[in-house]
Length: 435
Image (cartoon, rainbow, N blue to C red; front, side):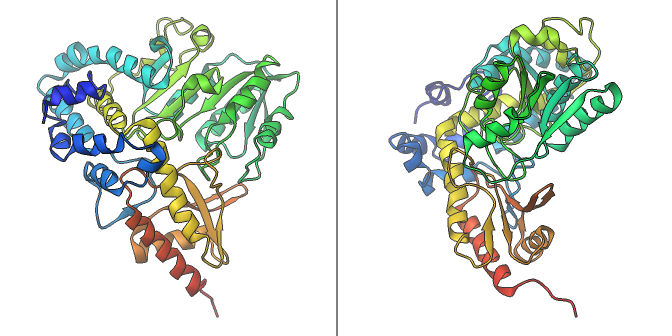
């Protein structure tokens, strides 16, 4: 076996993995070279069903074997290499907090900014590192200069934290929210885009688009909407909380002006880590949400004036990037799609089962939503948890009612077989009746 440094260099991993000695040794000891060399000869689609490789990936996590976690859409666990980095950075800070935090680890933000920018395919001067999608998108929403009567197009299926931010601006400043309501699932890009464009008027200033609807996993054609919006002088905000490091894309592919994501979801970075992107020439148009000496300046760092933050969490993001690159973005997306389709296609044979998510990779990936005739979503969720030790989440939101299931790269097909067995038994038993 070659040295750790040779392995990581070959895989394109440098800044994060090499910053803390020894973190990646356990990964290499579990057969990293053989596992990656084998799947590198396969297409992403063929590698998606190579269970030996994905069992190796599973071993890098510390998930509880007595609980099948299928709510990775909320927050994902971190591989052990990321946990170890986080702990070691945290211990390092405690050797002399004000010195090691402000004079040492703080220097790591610029290399991390460059790594995230490279992963997202954008300029590092357009990336701000923060704590989650809500913080990033709220910074944009509250930072925009809007006047009473200006219209903002949003959907009823957008995330509540973003909708509440818009509602606050409507209540306080008199802007007007124009609502669209999706009929999901949909495999009609033109219809999905038209839902937004039909709502545009001469007063529309902003359209807020969720790249992947968190309730069902529906992928929205952001680029089509953005192109139509820009043709009318309308700016585009994109919520990519559920797509970054999940499906393989670059921010530029979306054609948006403002964008944010959470890194503790599909990148499997430390809890409470995220990033925001703003097109360089538009940074000056967004006022900093937190206090800054140049709140209307052109430096993206004005959005990072958070005071004391968890430097350990922030610096360990780089190890999550490394792990993501070890797997490979295209291979990861193919596996996530494979897992979703694997259990959904089996469950669709169960009488009373209804899938509320598309199987077409153009319109969905790992995240799916289902219902069983005669059951409320919370009844299914409770039965899965109490009897089968399967953790999902019940969804009751607008016109969406079902149970959300989100596997991740450490999820095994055996886990999903257990899910299908549980669904089969729950459907066969029927809902409880009261006399």
